[in-house]
Length: 331
Image 1 (cartoon, rainbow, N blue to C red):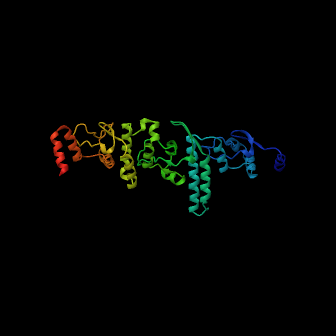
Image 2 (image 1 turned 30 degrees about the horizontal axis):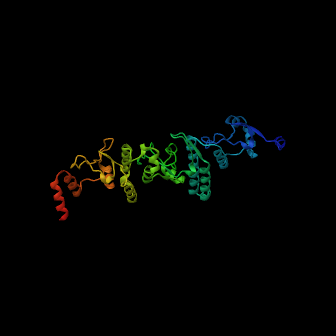
Image 3 (image 1 turned 135 degrees about the vertical axis):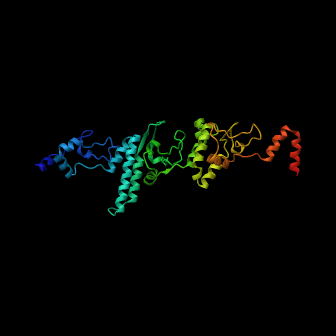
C-alpha cells in the first residue's frame, strides 16, 4: 500500500504542513536547534507533526523526501535578507561550533579536516552575511568587509565605543558575546590595535565630520585619547610607540591652561617660572602622573624651560638681562 500510495504522486509535488504553511516537501527541512536562532524563514516540519505522525515522517525520511538542513540552505536564506544583531550572534556561534567540532574530530582521528574547504565555506558565509545594526547610527554592513574587532576581555585596554570607530570594525554589539581568541582563530579578523584606533580618530576626515572628536579642537576628547594611550603604554611595542609619538608630536593635542598646544609648547605643572606658561591642565582635573606623565613626556611635553627661553622672556621685561644673554651667546 505504501508503494502504491507514493507511486500515485509521481507527477504532483508531495505537500506537507511546515512552519510556514503548506509547502512542497522538497522545500521543507527537519528542524534542528543548531539553526533556530538565525534561520527564521526556512520552512521546517513542526514538532507536533513530527510527534503526531511518527510513522509517516519515518517513511518520508527513509525515502529521502525529508532532508536535514544543509550549508546551502544557510547560504540561500542569508542571501534573502539581512540578519539582526542577535541573529548574527547565533549564526557566528553556529559556525564556531562547526569549526570546533571538525577540529575535535580531526584530533582523535575520526575524520580529516579539509582546511581549504572550510576556508572556502567561511568566505561564502561571510559574503552573504549582511547585518542590520540598530546603532546609533543605524546601518547595514556585510561581514566580508569586516577586518577588526574590539577586545572586550576585562584586562583589555578600553577603546571608547562612543567615539569614532573604523567602518571595517565588526559591531561591538556582536563581538561582545565572544572570546577574542575565538574570534581571531575562527574568523579572518584581528583585534583592533591601539595604533590602528589612534590613526583612525586623528584622520582629518573623522575630525571634519564631528568637531567633538577632533583632538586639536576638543580638550575633553584629547584627554580621553591620551588616557587610552596611557593605559596601553606599558604594553605597546617600541615600534607602536614611535608611530604614536611621530603622529601626535605634530598635533596641537595637549590640553593646557592656555588651550590645546603642540606637545613641545606645553609644560608640566612643576614648571612655575612664568605665570602665563601653557601648563598641562586636563579638563577633568586629572593630574598627569604615572603612565600619563610618561606618554606626555614621550610626546615632548617639557619638564623645565631651556636657558635661552628664560633669557628671552626675562629680556622682554628687564633690559639688563638682554645684555647678559648677549654676553652668554658671545661666550
